[in-house]
Length: 165
Image (cartoon, rainbow, N blue to C red; front, side):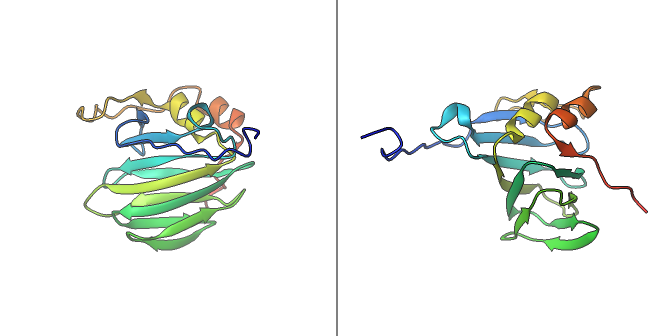
């Protein structure tokens, strides 16, 4: 039987994935749990994001990827192509290619998101802008995105924010 006909499974426990602190305006951290480098599949990557109150994921879109998010803790607002949607635990969001989106944690507790990115690549973005995190360590002081963030966005085929009116 070929490797493609052999069932495969991967189990990644808490604090076993790649963990990275995130710069402003998101802060918090990312755990990348599944990516082509640690599993037999190359069609997606997935993990979690923890975003403190008052922080947000900047408006952007993706030219070659779809992004699926499941909110399992916290509350906020998700703006997609200018339309605001209330976000509560249990909310599932799918961003298709070119959908301009932003997520704001408007609550008083951390917002926790499970994400799937397909095809994979979001893990490359997080590694390019983040700083290595050891689970359990205190959150570092806020830090800015790297100076080359525009080049990283272009390489990742992120679509810059649409003009604000």
